[in-house]
Image (cartoon, rainbow, N blue to C red; front, top):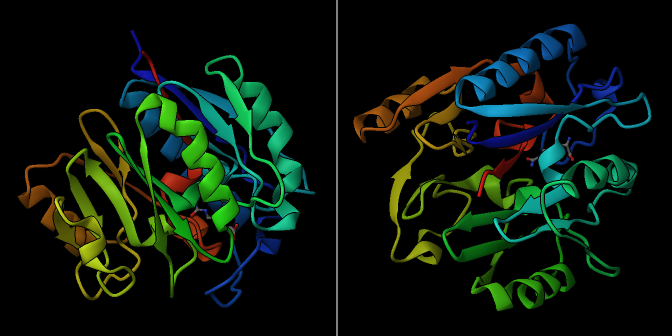
Length: 257
Ligand code: CIR
């Protein structure tokens, strides 16, 4: 019995034309990116998830970052209005895939949000206000989620693309943070693991049931996670990192209920 479904999306041949906000454009090897993506999908399968792989086209350079197109809860899923206009084309196929697993809500204008700005820790939901995600979106999410007992809090994001560039959940009460990019006091009541100061991009970890999927580029922080007793599965993610992506961005995790 699988733990759930992981929705992924192919690496577009146009990945090199991706959106970039805080990084300089450098060449991306699409074939290496595709090989790394296969490795990532295999790691998801080994963690007990059935992978549903969506196709891509040349018109959607950022399609592999499927996390931004939806936010999945046990009770429902929300299709976002991505903050970059170039990414609106990505939403229909993701909505089609998700509607088979969850009741679906669609974010409305003027709300804009990327899933990378939504951090879920138990019944607490932190929405990062960033260049992609606005207050209208946060208010819509709060209204939608309130009947299910979720509490939505807004957090200002600075110096990085998404909230989940700066903080991700390791368990319902343990977070991985880069304190240079996010105010630790926002997460009062949570235990925190800080990234190694030499690995500022290391705060993005994908929490699965019994393990953490994590980029092999951050060995110092990985060692910290292991010292906390976490099982860390390393995957190569160097090419998506050049496109300002990381491990959470490349899947939508739909847990079995
Ligand atoms: C973008 O700027 O939209 C993509 N190049 C990177 C998106 C990464 N997504 C994520 O962190 N959730």
